[in-house]
Image (cartoon, rainbow, N blue to C red; front, top):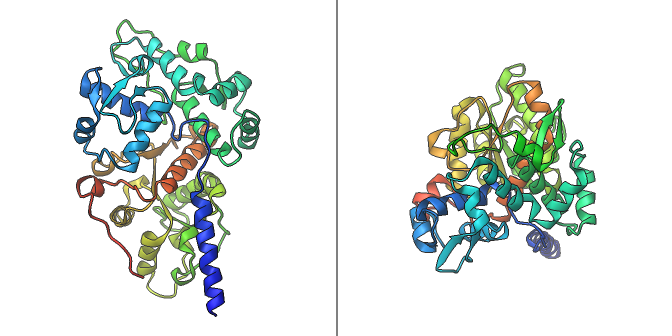
Length: 387
């Protein structure tokens, strides 16, 4: 019995070590949009001049020494948006970084700078764009093979493709043409800008698992370290909310989570014996990952979201474009999915899957540094489980 327990512990430790093994990347560890927003904050705080790192993060209500703050600076450096590391006294925008965020720059020049930093200057992204420009977005597996050929480490190739796709979309190099997503040239992206005599109208590009069908599991028998709990409005069997939840689960979440060795569990997949509310809360506080769909502004969803925020454990937020993101949580990254009609949704399925995969990956890699609206103002407050 003791031997079995020791073996079980060793297996768990080995799995955790494998999960935390350093990933070798020849590309930044985040999509371009977030470091660009940080560069914009640097610009606004210092009016384009160099700023003190500590003063900047105090202004942003963030800890300058937290892992997430350090990673933000690292990624901004890898995209050549700023100069100065996470231990530097001063942070300064690079010339291209300044052009990317300065509202006084013409939209065309600003977009050129963004394309340069997000795609062209990242060697693997630039080569991928050169290889596939003018073509429909290939299958993800084909892109992963291409990334490996171009030097991506096997353990990081999928992440490279997720980031590549998101960067293409953000800077306008991935466009929906004739009902399909196509990788377009820089000239095409520049031509799509609306002509303007002023720089006031800035270009804005960006986002407008395994589960056995019918399977049920009790909280008692769940393997929480390999579980992704999906918080979502469910509704009745034939309701619009149920159809919406099924669509998001099968089309976006399950494909996006496939490579993370996690099992997706939704509330209706929990076996009924026992107190169902207790089991749901146990999933919320113990699952390795929670994905929350804020669509329809369901009160139960927000209640469960608040519990997860208190736990400060990995979380990813989704919402349909038709709904607004509530003020109290609008500073957290939320993936917006346009379900306006089939013509808006279908061509971008691969992009949404890549965006969800990217957010899941970053959430799991920074599991000890989860920032929520609660942690922003009460950094020392954290709920813990004893069972």
